[in-house]
Image 1 (cartoon, one colour):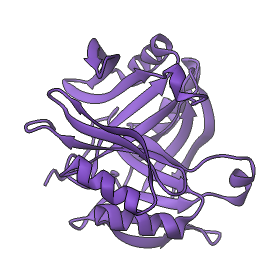
Image 2 (spheres, rainbow, N blue to C red; image 1 turned 45 degrees about the vertical axis):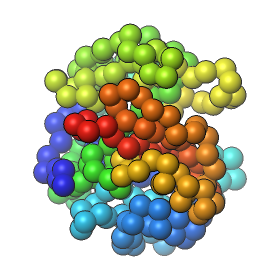
Image 3 (cartoon, one colour; image 1 turned 90 degrees about the horizontal axis):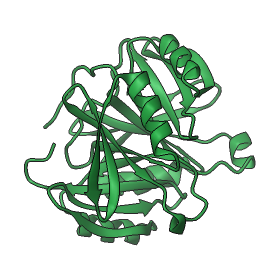
Image 4 (spheres, helix red, strand yellow; image 1 turned 60 degrees about the vertical axis):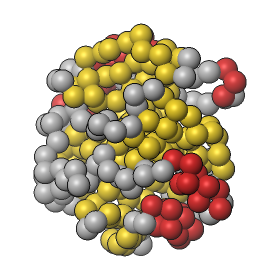
Length: 264
């Protein structure tokens, strides 16, 4: 079990799902990954559902507001990066050409966060931990193991994130025939980046989430039986593992990957 006690700044630490039907989404993900759900009151009648695996928190979901649904915003997974100071990170992101969508605010006594958008249009959040670090279990079946940026402007995005988080870039890697950029935080992989392809259609830039699984093909079959849609068929990536991209019944994209032996 890869249990986390602390995240180094600039590390992805949490993901949560804004969905159009929290009850149905909760049922889908608990059946798919074996997660246990715990509902927490979040004020104004809102509920924040925490998912845990082996007694450790892995991610969460919540019901998207009626206003956002009326504006046509789709169900989506959001990625959070741990930072030393959310206010400083938001100000730095804006100075680098990004946009602050939600100014830094306290989440009770557990942390402080801000919602940001990079210069190429992808949305992400920063999390300044206080009493809560984020995911307590990663890189295990049923837990988050990777975050990947899909963008139209790779150079712009690379410059922004390396400046904001101090990441290093390793490029030129070929993944299923496409150039792939890997970000590193110190000596540890921090995330990846891939250019949006024309055949994807009108896809906006976004950070995708990957959950580790024991068996990719079996998990995909199970997801389809639960009402998901297959977006990218199970594909092998040499030295990395076998992955697939799915869309849950409410329309949120996520990926699963059966990691190759020795890959963390």
